Image (tube, rainbow, N blue to C red; front, side, top):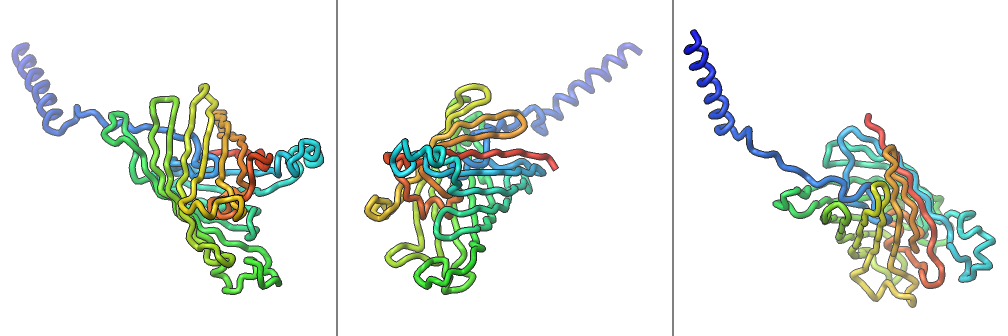
Length: 301
């Protein structure tokens, strides 16, 4: 009886080992790199991150007025370093339809000639970086459509006169994000970007191409430093003579466990790429930067 029990045990053990080898059950699973960035935005640029399936993110973003009013610290007190004026305000929600695909809808005040904008955006993650470096980067594509709901201007020379009807209220953006997380302390992202405006001023271009360079430096367990710059392909347009500047920003990000809080300094008045890429005209050197903040609160639905 003992011999029979021993034989059955040996047969069962061999069967388990053989089955595992045949079907690869002992093969290690892929380990992906998470939280290249903590949020779905860096400062201005969308980040590589997507929401998990079933997660709803409620977002409030604010850009105040110029930190230094009219180039003078004395004048800055009249607006309390910009806190008493709002260049742009946005609020909205985003939702993770799958782990790699999310959509959102937002309302922005608007800092360019087109105000009262409704924004529909979407992002899809194409690739995810793995810890074994067989996939060295993460990649995602993001797009947005902005529709101005402001009253039509009676000034026929203004963009807000919308001579072509509803189509002239619309602006589009498309971004390709490529990012890599280097260890636990540093992340880098490169994002070629295209903005298309259906209506532009004379001698301007409907299509604006640029590339965003973004970085995140982990300082403590809960705090990181963010850097964000958007560099134009058409350097002639982004000059002081043409009234346009390169959007630059530095931010500090805090992960409280319940939500992500970000405070930043940027010369961009607009929040969405359909706004800050075409219409940033402020100069850091003249104190024309502003304090901004973003509060992001995620809920699992």
